[in-house]
Each structure stands twice: as C-alpha cells, then as structure tokens.
Image (tube, rainbow, N blue to C red; front, side):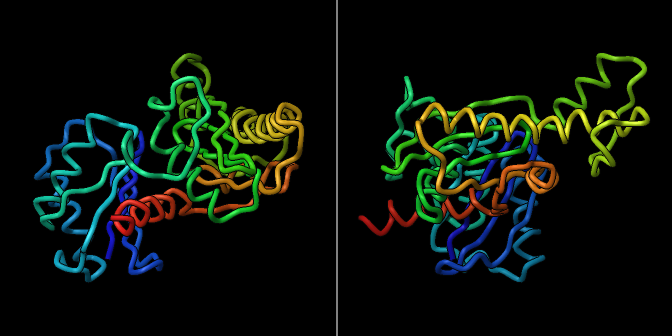
Length: 258
C-alpha cells in the first residue's frame, strides 16, 4: 500500500491506497508543537483502528503547506515504517506545467489538486478548494496551471468577525436559512456561507472571461466545500478526496518511472 499525507493548516489528512483503491482516510489536528514521536503514536493508532500493519506499506508521499510540520510527520512515518516519504516540491515529477511568476513558490496543495483535476476531469477545469483559505485555480486544456485567487476561508472569516466585533458571537457552521438574515446567527451564516458561494459564482464568471472560454468542468474540494457549493448557482462537482488522489498520481509518476 501507499501512504498519502496532506498536511494542511488546520488538519492532516492521511489516506492509504491499495493499487488505486483508497482503503481508509483519517485526520489529525495540525500542531506545530508536536514532535515526531507524538505524530508516530497518533499515526500508529490510526493503523490499529483500520487494522493495517506497518509492514503493509511499500511507499509514502506527503504534501505540506506547514513547513514546521513537514519534518516531524515525515520522520514519524520513517520511524514507523522505515520508509522515507516523497515530499511534493521542486524536483518532483508532476506533469503539471506551472505558468505563474515563480513556479517554485506554488503551494503543494495547488499542485496535488491540479494534478488530480488534470487526470480526472475534462479541461479546462476550475478547482475550488475551500479549507482554511478559499482558493480557486485554473488548469487549462494543455494541463497548465494558469494561476489562482485566494481569500480568507469560512472559519477564518467567522473567527475574525467574532474577535473584532464585541457583539457578534462565535458560531458553528450550518446551513443558512435565508440570504436575508432575521437574527444575528443567520445573518452571519448568510454573510459567510452564501457570501462565499456568491464570490465563487462571480469569480468563476470572471475567470471564464479572462481565459476567453467557459470551463469544461468545475470541481470543489476541502472541508467546507459541500456546505458552500450547496449555495452556489454554478454547477460544481464535489470531490472529497481530490488531493489524496493527486498525491497517489504523483507518487506513481515518480516511483514507476524509475
């Protein structure tokens, strides 16, 4: 099996592939203070939970947008399995042509999502990734990453609102009852959920104008994707494990080509 690990700002998503089948998915909280042995204990508990042996793994790949966590997680995997993980970054084969000012600074989450979108969906494809940040990016018909837009994510927006405005409470994520809120909670939900959905609809339209054509596909992933796209007017496909699948594709490109 191949271990795939996506280190995000809020969560670490761990998946295991047997051939091309995703066998299990689990999550840990991202913690910059946690040491390699602590991560190893948590990952070992995940293996036990899903009845997986350390010896079942033949390879590992990880992507990270939190540099402080990259080494301890990679080292945890090495201590458990004896495997040195591939790390998505410069020098790794992806097949993705990155057409931005400095390709070396593109986040690993964009790369893995773009690689998966390029293989799974008709191009050009717009990818909407809704997690700690709300991101939209374009993979054109030639498999090139054209660029992106980044905004504060749902939780970041809500936390900033409650922290900065004394009379506005901190609330959980749930569906907005209507666009025009009748109370504080519904008004915040409308402003964040429906507001983000409206931003996505508007940005998709503007992206289409800028590249001179409509996308052949639009796909959304990330922790808040399902809640947000339910409020979008644009037809958007939900793909929960897009980034893990992208990691597996990148792993195969680098290992099988040797």
